[in-house]
Image (cartoon, rainbow, N blue to C red; front, side):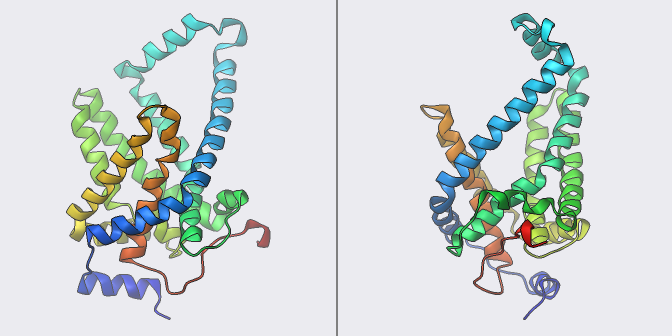
Length: 261
């Protein structure tokens, strides 16, 4: 069996084909399998996050001071440039801490592709230390650079440029998390391998991820709650990209069960 490192070296040395139509079709077929379950999972996680946010807000301002005017004042403050640093730290922390759950959605896509049962507890499987530390470090580094540049350019009133650069960084690092959870790579190695592999197909990947982004916004039409069930298309696209470039050595789904460890 060819090791993942050998395969990456082979792809870097010899290149690879990546056809837009094939990857898109693979992503769409996968999305049809996970859309409902993934959408419901996002709804549940979103509800839980709202509860924690409400508790945090009450703890911060005090229940006796919590009213409509206080909320409006906080909203207006967060839009000011001097508060961009706080937003940056918040995004950096949340993205890093919840990266294992994002990885869980990729595992769901893999399980759906292989017609293997996926249970809710599997979303938390990557909080095992061996996976968590690599996902945390990788996400921290990527978010630090991406959101850092975005926040800096927003501060200098060129947010569009910051958004474009952040999207570009997202394209180059799209394989990082899959390489960690499927290829068992270390954080820095996964980021480096992702950048080297994706840079040669940047335009195709840009089109794929941009279409996935637009597809996820379809849910905003009509009832906005529909976006919860279109967002998973981004996850299916990321999985399809990894499967098309790196692939899997066998037909079995990779589902980490924390109960076995």
